[in-house]
Every structure is written in structure tokens, then in C-alpha cells.
Image 1 (cartoon, rainbow, N blue to C red):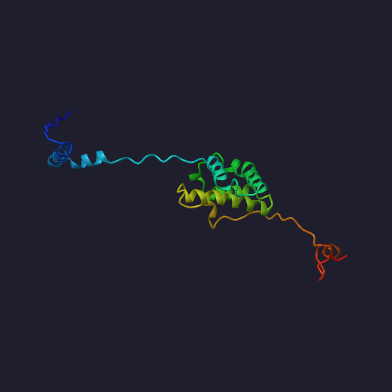
Image 2: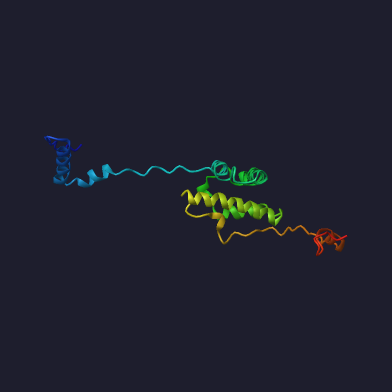
Length: 175
């Protein structure tokens, strides 16, 4: 066990006492210990749950700004699609690989549906970038692609149907 010499410091003020303590550290050659003792260790950064963040994002940035039907649709996308896939994950842990795996798992859905889900996910993760939770948005990676090849065939309108919806030159509908 090492014993260090104790040094008595006398002063007339707190500032003078602090100056003498620092000088004593300098004189002892232990100034590095003194400086390191004053350094604050960075606090461990807490992780942000995707579901918690997304719900807060919806209430803060979308509630009241979107029509009720759009609000309802966003909630359905979150509840049925994004929460099951990403809800238990920390937002900082979501990678482009996770996003693509989600899309690949759901490739049997319509391409437009996957595009809508991805768009909502991008909005949420863009907000996390703005909030400095993420450095970059993993859903915006150029490697991500929509794997769906499912398309809904649409029939062209008949001539009679077109006449019903296109007005003639007088502004009346044709019959």
C-alpha cells in the first residue's frame, strides 16, 4: 500500500484554495489525474422503441393535420404492418436489411400497398433523423426495392361509360 504525502493548504478564499490545490497537483506531477477526475463520462444513450416513437410522432405531427380518413389509414398501416415488423425494435437498431426483409416477407401484397407502408416508415424515420436519434434513414437506402409483382388489372371504360362522364362542348353530359 502506497502512502502519499499529505499537504496542508491554507488560503483566505475559496478561489485561492482552488488555485493552491491545482498548483499542488502540478507540483506533484499528478495533474493528469486531477484533470481526468473532472471529466464527465458521457451518459449512456438510451435507446428509443420504434412503436413508442411512431405513436408519439403520429400524435405530434399528424394528428389534426391530416383528414380523419388519412389518420385512420396511417393507424391501420402502423397497427397491421409496421408495429408487428418493427414495433419491438429500437429505432436505432433498424437497418436497411431489416426494411428489405420486411418488404420481401410481404411481397405477396400489392406493390402500391408496400409502397404506402414504406412511405409511412420513411416519414417516421426521417423524423428520427431530424430529432438526431438516427444519423441516416435506413429506409431511404438506394438498395431497397419493392419486390411485389402483384398488380391489379383494370378494365378500360366503354364508349358509353366515357360519354356518361365526359361533358360535351355545351357543358352537358352526353347521352
